Image: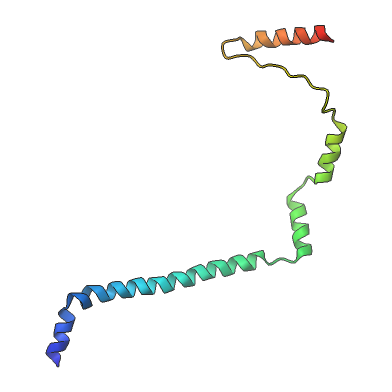
Length: 107
């Protein structure tokens, strides 16, 4: 009986295969538990009262959409001119001066 036990202990399958199998299966269960903790924490974080959540979001956004709309209503968006920018080989200062002269002559 002791010889059979000794023969089993010397077997390569028992020596190397069994620990590897235990590591893979045990690691799978361990990772499942850790990922479950992660998802549980996310659920708790997302559970906010809707009224409280509305107050929190309004504090994060200092500018309200209606205020921005009122500012844009006051601007003249139709009175614009398309002005070509200088090419890489052109002198930008000289080109800007030419554009200003043409614009002032046009008005």
